[in-house]
Length: 409
Figure 1: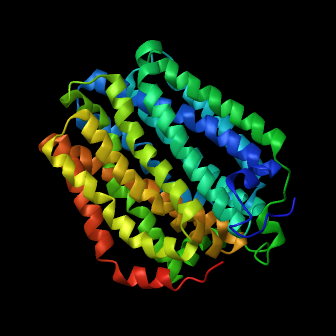
Figure 2: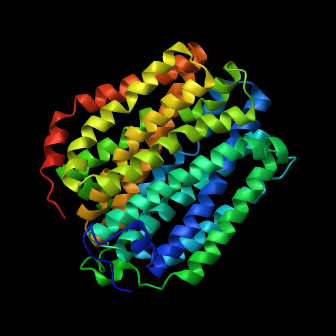
């Protein structure tokens, strides 16, 4: 199928959903994301119930991010193998891993290697999926599609987290993991039947004759030697600071005298804000203005988190996290510009590098946030994370200039 092209005026969310392959890929991702959020709540509850430790809870949560350090070398699979095959195989393997985690008698420490394996598999999977969307949609159609994917992913997180706490309280944490395993199996089936077979992008490029060892870090090189790509990556990686509240939702809910439902409400707040912010940015703000707003929103996302220092009530805490999420919607423009600037034959590797770095800095942020929460308080850890993110964004004046010079598509 030919990529979709067109102007922002002519393309809408409904328009890109009319593209068959994109529609099936989108549906597979949405239902899988619902299961993922349920699993995150389940893992947090399992570890906190077993240890009563905010540090251990945040650290185990961080393991869903840190293993992605293997992403750059594994990302080559997204370019050297047919991308549909990478997606199907990755989904099936993760379904098996989640099913193993759901075994009732499995001690919680065994979750660590299993989570690590699942995230390692997710590195080439995410690279292949993001690159495949760019193969299916092009031009401003890709921006609309990327905005829809981010908005619906936040919506899926919102529903998954909000109902996940209730579901875990009713069904049990292990059942939540089993449900997530089923969503991966469904995703594999939908992708296999709904997407067309394509040859590996590497086969059609001038780099096809190179040895794999020589091309292993090609994606890293192209990102770090291209100034706009480098700065877009840095703005995306600010999520390393802004993810800290997620890892501390369980201990904060306990301090506020809430249970599993309160954990779900807190975890749903940031996705709710991002959902609203993403829809507003993509549908109503022109691309050149979105770019000018990117540094401001990146710095502003930390301000509501700083207000958490006063340990406000649950409803106020949720509102503050939602405001931070709304500002973090700038990421949709950062991601779409990044993919557009990447050479097609290196797109999978470049995306794998950026995504792996993103997950790694989020993992580091969660571990550091957990340590601060243990030594001080979870509320202080969230406030310090917000301050760190805002200060970093405000000091990147060179990045603001590079982003403003990007050509309008």
